[in-house]
Amino acid sequence: MAQINGVNNANGNMNINGLDMKGMSPFAAAALVQLEIAKTNKDSATRYINDMKTQNDRAKQLMAAADKLRQFKDDKSIGDYKIPTNIDDMKKQLETISKAENTYKKMLNDIKTGDLKPYKHGKDDCYNLPNDVYKELKTLTDSVGKKNFPDMTRGDDNIHMEYELKGGLKELEKYKAILTAAVAAMETGGISATDFNGKIDSTRIDSLLTSLQHQAENCNSDNQTQMVKLQDKMGQYNAYVSGSSDMIKTGAQLQQSILKS
Image 1 (cartoon, rainbow, N blue to C red):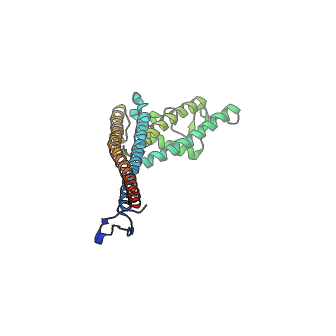
Image 2 (cartoon, rainbow, N blue to C red):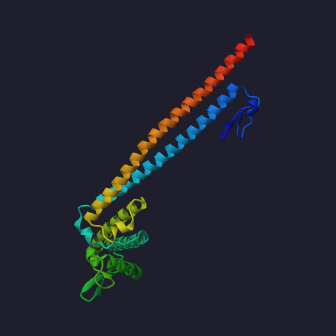
Image 3 (cartoon, rainbow, N blue to C red):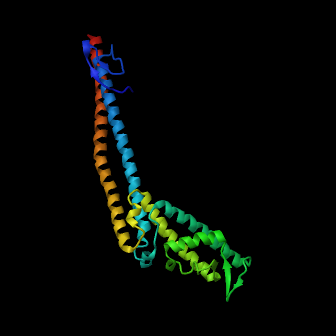
């Protein structure tokens, strides 16, 4: 269907920019005009539908991010974490945690199968972490706060005994969940690293939850406005399609009447 940019009636000839209507009956030309206007309304309605879908998806992301944070709301111990102040550093820490988790799980399995043997280190039997994992993990625990990871490091390069591997793995999983929740909140675009400011305690979580929920409500409110506009455009679309059909019928009836006379 040709796009209408303008309609004129110079010298008795109907024209639509980009389309030669010379020789068309007035009824056919009017029908075509109405169909073009109907198309314009349909295109607008399609844009509203796409916008509403985008807003709906964003609202879901915001609420999902809020749910991830909410699980830590009553955990007072998280207030001791010193989390990174930007999303890139958070993601780097998540990579370090995943690497350490895999090592912990392998060592625990090796202990179970007897493939990992303890050795004497002073008075203790110790399990030695791979040097690269230890260095990355010690850097992480020093920056986050050693008191948050009581079973992770002991001032040297050894993890002591199987129970400490299990305790360390539990601590890693908890901190990983917190970082994942923080990253999810920021990736919605509704929260920035400055909103955390290196901390994620219950008071801060309350504030972040309020912000995320408010933004989700705004998305829903915008969709209600878009729905009104959508209904209007679809109503106009139907009216112009109907008008075009009426013009064609009227033209046909007039033609039949002329032929009979």
